[in-house]
Length: 164
Image (cartoon, rainbow, N blue to C red; front, side, top):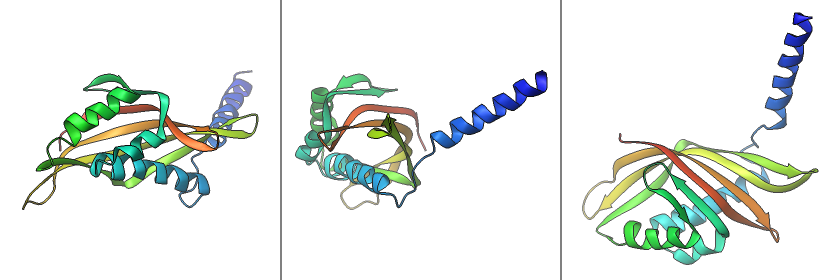
């Protein structure tokens, strides 16, 4: 009896692992999420183009940060303007690590409705006449949902911030 229970547990674990595998980096879904990530971080965070951020934020977006607490869509953009983009001579920059991120599709009865993006990113400071220098590294998890065939960022988790 114990052997059958162990076998069932192992089979359940394997099924769970294979049913929630990340997509390949050359897949359409991965490339779509990468594009959305670039709109938020390359356009928005790094270059202060706030329209890029607004276009991909879900109206009910929630941001959980292990150092800064909880914020919502409008607070997130105001915070970017006041903190990330207020000092162009000492500008924070975000970069993905070489590992990039993983994407896990979310289905409802076989229909794709969202994706989970998990990765590690690094933060730097860009100052005039200086090389970029790293200030932080953190893990992130983003939950994306499809609304009217457009990807919207609904939940952001930013955690395990570490100084280099």
